[in-house]
Length: 564
Image (cartoon, helix red, strand yellow):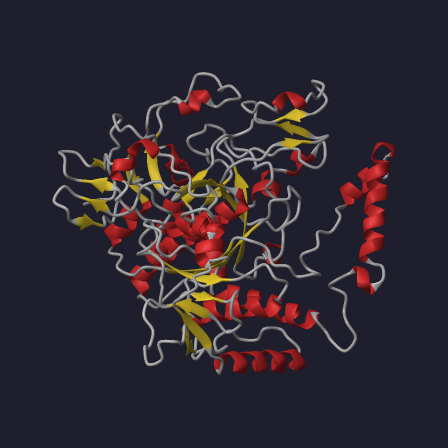
């Protein structure tokens, strides 16, 4: 059955949790005619429109061309809930790795060698096939090349572990689980009246005369950008350990991933520091900002003071920057072979976090910012030179000297009593991304069950119980673009074989060609529009400064990939 179908207007559950797929052109949805006038601050005119009609999808385009090869997405994050009903068949359990709890890798095994029943784990070599062949010249000095070669040799001969007692991803994997759902999430199994479990390739149940979603509200007809691809989870921690991240990128390269998604920053003590912008320096010279200028000056003294005040200071007899330098060159080199999708950051700064800041025309690093259904940059999203493109996400309140963007549905909005006419006001968006959540207490929703009145259906694996959560940030935006990259690679494989892929530079070029600044962020009605975040006339910089190449259209990107 085709994945395209009309959604019945009588379907009781709102389909607006699919809005980001429509905004990206993954699905073609008719949201009805826009209101005659712009809606009020509460977005009610948008939210009260009838449920959309889904007429076609990018999946249809790929299926019609004969796709049989899934793409492989490597997600470098804090882990993924492998047993989530929307992810269980998408996560490659035999290839995923935990680098946070063991230097050479760990993995949960359902059954181990029982020769010694008292041993809770056994040794396993995760990096046995590791090789840098194919990467070319990394641009390192001879000494650093030898240093990296020693690292590769160590990991190639290393022994990680298979475990059966402890699964840390049941505790700390909420962020990775949310990102994984946006990339490859598929509908949970639907239990038919016959008692047979059906795992549909699409969200639609064809039991009636017209294709329509399942009426069982305990199973969300939820899916990510490319539910036909697979995901390898590479679990890392937040420790300032460059070797951990070197191992993560080496492992993704060894696994021949088609796209690497990094929806977070890396704690490089040098490259992750935000540099003050010239226009902000000028602001600090004004009388009204003298207190802030004094604070920044004292912070600078503390950071550049005695070594005991700086935990990242170089210690005698060591060179901690060497590993971070090698990591930088490794990321850039791998990106030329495999596209690396990075979050731009959530600081509202006019510069990228690291390593999104490495994005350039000659590499495959894709720096992704966030936009709202209102067509504005998300209030928290970083922007500026180096931004590659944007994707839909939620919003963040802003109340500074340059703009006012507040949630007027919040009971606390009256606290922001700014004099009218003093600053520009921008409409706040209440739309967020719905995605998969880590089940149980440690998920974003702490195991909350939004369908508690439907507990008689609790034997269905798709019931709420904390399985879903609202999500956003540039992390969510980067995850969506990771899914679009998977679609493109899957389309490319049709004409070139299962082991083929577009390299990072070519795929990045294709994505930017399929992006535009004129797109309406569905189901809204405003094209991408600059705002004033850090200076009064900042919107004069133009749309590229805020949105890079713009909002990509997945269907167009797939069409271009089929022509390669």
